[in-house]
Length: 399
Ligand SMILES: *Cc1c(COP(=O)(O)O)cnc(C)c1O
Image (cartoon, rainbow, N blue to C red; front, side):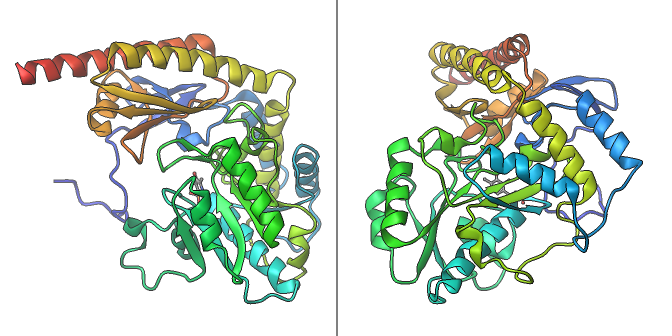
């Protein structure tokens, strides 16, 4: 039995106690080193203890941590200017988390329709397998029964259809629809990419029906797929986009980006946050962008992703009874297991390499974007040993 704990028992925690991190490595209290391809669930985009982030935290920490949004914020203006200069967006609202960025995105879409004289248009079309956070609205948007059960009536206004099913989307559009919300690459759902054709078709439907296209790039954004944002791959742009995770590099930070038109309903007094966009968060968000926007950084992500793709494809060929499929974009990779994914993840942990479980029997590999080709090969060698051990055990069992 687990020991009594003063914590809410909402997590099944892995019995590892990490004390510090260095780049792609995590080090336990006992000094054991683990290759961290979970990266705080795609949050530690620059790995652990990145010198530029540490320096920024120390410098800003001695100046100003928190102000509230009662005053002007040069840090917010600077980060918003850089985000809008590098994306489709004209406007940014800063939050502390992904779910709050989604809440802002949903409110922005509903408020846009309201301001256009359509208060009845508040429904958002979402997709099966989605994950948008754990607030009351975002569990309704995600639509997963296991996250909704026991929390009272599901928040109204979310209509879910199968991922990638254009006819179902068309059928779900009514006079009450405000927008369509999608992760271009589903994370929790098992690293499932929407096809470029599907995303382009959603863009067309939104124009046709006066709907707002909302992308949840909380996990796939900020360089993760090899572009600054995943919407760049299909060559279209959403109207609203939720960002978090990698943008803070480990500091709690999220953002809701929108075109000026989409944000036009969000006038003074309609939305707010106490902590969102505080000076400490802004300093670190700006420091993350210093690195991610450097010449050649995204090229590096693409190059290392290729090492992973080739290595994982070869492991799939060599261990077909363990690995069924390899998928994903850039450094947002999914290994679909043939055995229960928890068993493979455990075998990997025995080799001191960390990943994250996802839906569809998939293990997510979300290495820091700063991972080198050599570190990628070290990781592949560890996954190979894990798969080899599992295969031996399975042979023994069936003998
Ligand atoms: C993690 C995640 C969220 C929620 O972010 P939190 O910071 O946990 O609130 C929302 N959408 C996607 C795609 C995510 O991966």
